[in-house]
Length: 113
Length: 216
Image (cartoon, rainbow over all chains, first blue to last red; front, side):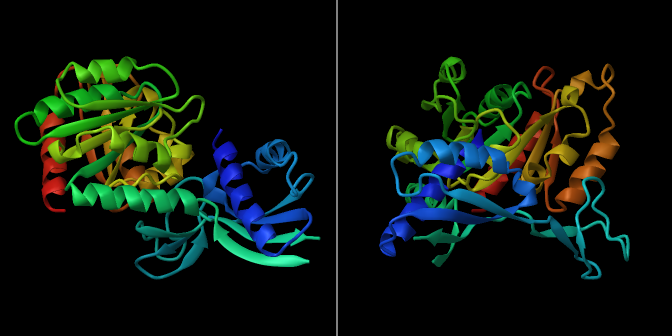
């Protein structure tokens, strides 16, 4: 369900930027989404198709760039992709890991006519 | 033509959250965002916390639910100010809803504001509402594998209250394994083990909460 409010917020940003550029049509929306957010691309496209009716973004396609969940070991500084289970540093077996990516939710760019 | 945007999708939510934070700071209100899956015992933990802190601080409550006001009515019996938010289908509270609720609470008479989020381990983790503290209520019957399934939630919170520990003799739940996983995903998190049925562990949790509030 949270894709609905995320799509609404995203569309607000998109329409603002498109208006600023005096665009007539938005054709593509490029998003950067962290893996950990669990946002589902099909859901976003589904809500977007409904929310954009009668706006200049009607028919716009969403493109997702997924950012993998990465962690940094606080002990040795190694950066590694966080597995689903057991966040342990593969080098020093350190157990204290800071999340450095995977929480992103960004509109990167839009393509307009 | 491509236009570079690079804007945080939840920027608008974060801006209102910042306003909420400002308003609460002005009235010296300490806000706690209480999250959990449905049935983990959010309302029960809230009630126990309210009773444990009676006379020690002035509490207010915001109840977030998809529908109904059952929880708000239960809490209101404790004689404290409470506002119910019905999200009407949305699976989490957003900062603008909290903004409305704050306008309906006697903020000068509240020191500690407990905000019960919608029962869900996914979406509330992403939406800041202007809180000072994020707390997750986990419970024994849910199983000890939840941190693996909802890493963002377990990574985001300041404290985890493991509820229903009175059921440990009857349920397969590895407390040691759970603790290890939780500390792995979130090294800074405080973990409390409680039972709202027996009252076990409520005092240390309430004491810690009060101390966090006073240290702000």
